[in-house]
Each structure stands twice: as C-alpha cells, then as structure tokens.
Image (cartoon, rainbow, N blue to C red; front, side):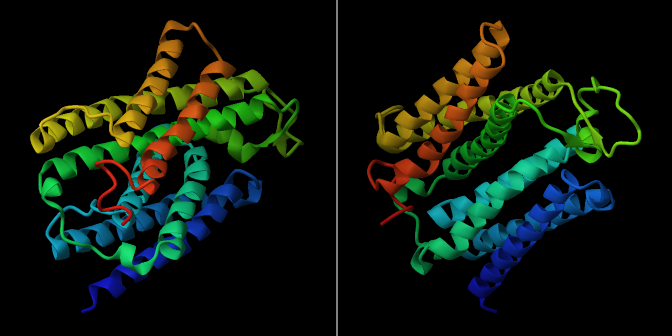
Length: 306
C-alpha cells in the first residue's frame, strides 16, 4: 500500500469537508431556516479531526517518530489542534460561533498545506541528532497546541473589535441562541420579527469573556512549552536560552499575552484596549510560528525550510 497516497487522500478529504463545514457553520449563524443542520457542522468537524488523526498516526508509525519534524507535519498538527480545541470549546459553551471562526482558519491552513507546499517538503526525512529526543513530542506539541488555543482566543478579540466599531446591526435568532448559554442578557423583541435586536454591550461582553477564558487556557500551555524548550536546549546545546529568533519571538508572544491577562485581571484596561492587545497577539503568534521559520536562520530552521 502506498501510504503517501493514503495521506494525500486524507488531507484532500479534510479540505473538502472543511469547505462544506464552513458553509454549514456560516449558514447556521446567518439563516434561521438552517437550524436543522446545527449538529451537522460538529459531526463533520469530528470526521475532519479523525482524518487528520489517521494522517498523523500513519506518519508516526511509518517514520518511527512523532510527526512534527517539518513544516508539512507541523501544519497538519496545527489544524488537528484547532479542530480538537474547537470541539472541546463548542461542547463546553454550546456555541457554534467557535466553529464559525475556526473553520475558515483551518481551511486556509489545509489549503496552504495541500496546494502551496512543494512535494519535497511533504516527505519525511531522517531526524537530525538534536531532534532525536522525547522532548520533540513534548515541547513542539505543547507549543503548537498553545498556538491553536491562542489563535482562537485572538480571533474572538478581533471579532469583538469589528462589532465594537459597528454602530448598528442585527443578529438572527439562531446566532442569538448560541450566546444564551453564557450570557442571558437578551433584549425582548416582538415575536413577529425574525431578527432579535441585541443590546450591543451584552454581545461585546459575551465575546470578550469567551476570548478571555480561551486565552487564559492557552497561556499556561505556552509557558510550559517555552520552559520545556529551554530544558531541551540545555540538554542538546548546553544553554537554556540563546536568543535564537524563534526563542525571541516566543518570548514576545508570551509577553503580549501576559500583558493581556494582567490587564484583564487587574481591570486596568477594559473592552477595546485588551482586545487590541490580543489582536496584536494573533499576528505575533503567526510570526513566531511561521515567519521566523521562513527566514531559514537559527536553531529552529532545520527540518522546516532547506
């Protein structure tokens, strides 16, 4: 059996289902008559996550190491992490809004993985000596999982800013029901209307609180990942910190989200200012995750771009 073909087919299937799932989630929050498909998006997301899980498992068994050694494997694992976290958060909050903002990002990542990366970058290669360690799975997997969580939290902050800048809007009954599980402050309106007019501050508070909780989950993982990387670096190169470009941007990412959480906990900033900080964090996460690696410099450049 050609395992490369199987992997490619699984990724292509994931892409197709992500596209369908995107339409389902966006229809659920846009059109009232699509309420019957509310659970279909979740079911498809589970299937997508399963396809990605099988892809990673095949590479793990076939190559003999956890599949996080190159850009292709890392992007697949990031998409797996996004869909996995999405399913957990959706179950906890009973909110389809998580899927509506996550699926487009996941779709873009898989599209980039499938169509933009050259074939040679999708092929596994022997690990360099420094990567032949159990720290590979622990450090890299925790870092990418933290990136996925922080990306979702930051996207909600971006949504907060978009709504904050909007003077008047309407949200249909289906989207309204998604928020009632964690914020029940909904204005009463006429039953004859198909749209509910929300109190603007209630919606902003709901999104802001959800973003805060998600970022609060991702930040400890980012901290653990950085510490694990420092310990691994000391074992491999004899130094906990060398100001490698990746290390520097990981520290910048940590500082931005630390400042965000501090501002929320101390209540020194409220509303728009913390959301702007989290939105900056969204950009910085991508610079740390992808931008630094495209430079091809530093200790983290191997295994990503030749």
